[in-house]
Image 1: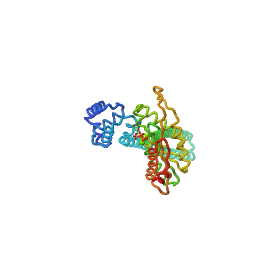
Image 2 (image 1 turned 30 degrees about the horizontal axis):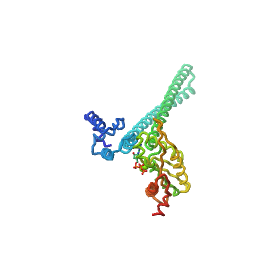
Image 3 (image 1 turned 90 degrees about the vertical axis):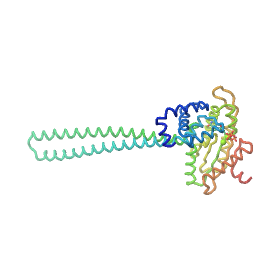
Image 4 (image 1 turned 180 degrees about the horizontal axis):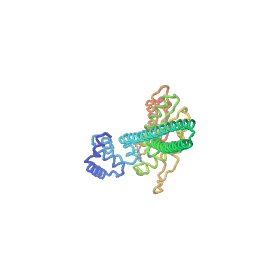
Length: 347
Ligand code: GH3
Ligand code: MG
Ligand code: MG
């Protein structure tokens, strides 16, 4: 999102842009969720933007704007600014907190210096002085100085406790922002960006690695028959099965619409193949029911492609081979797993 759009959406035209966005949404029968509204205000404010172009392309294709589609659009085109804003705000708050703590420490240091001087003076006068009245006044001022410094210390302690709480709150907030940025909202699995980063990292560390892509079969038909909401339910179900087989050190991600990726660090292709077959069997043997009406939906199946990393192979090459294996599974009738080595042999 450009600064231009931001300015427009906060400028004098904001109301008319908002009205136009709503009218467009109504015309296109786009459901007026807050996120859709946000997307469409951007479209009317910047009809030449990448977001507007992508939405036009999806409309041409006849796509349905499900929550997932909108989430993906927002993730691709809107969130960076929001994320940056949140990180910047947390950074500002942290720096304000540190400045205040450092000021409190300075004040405490000064008052303990003053107290040190008072102690030194007192010890001198106590050593030299015999007059009871002067001794008494020395003790009184010493007591006063002690009270003062202990008051200052209590203030500092309170300030430090408040700061510790605030810093912990900010840390949790930043952790949440980081989680949101790396998680897919529908399935709670890692998103594509998180997966790509991890794949890159693992490829730098180890050669022993298998990568699988898993794709729901004929999902468009399923959506067309049962609607996108039920489709979303199925996506969550498939994600939960894959997720159960993908505990660390494995990594599961929702890689695209109805496509998942699964990484097997330090595992052989045979072992990974077995796991994919277990997932596939678990998915296709479950008789699904529509939650809202309890209607039988039948079963869904998935196709999988598996590739074992070759020495020094780049992440995108490994992904391409897994994809080619998936494509072979689709071509051979779906609901099956193909090892990329077999694609290479057959080619
Ligand atoms: P294939 O077996 O070849 O994979 O066929 P397919 O129909 O699954 O594949 P295609 O790529 O033609 O269509 C994918 C469909 O997945 C289209 C889209 O409606 C659906 N889809 C993608 N993301 C979502 C989502 O978040 N929710 C729902 N309900 N459907 C989605
Ligand atoms: Mg599919
Ligand atoms: Mg697909």
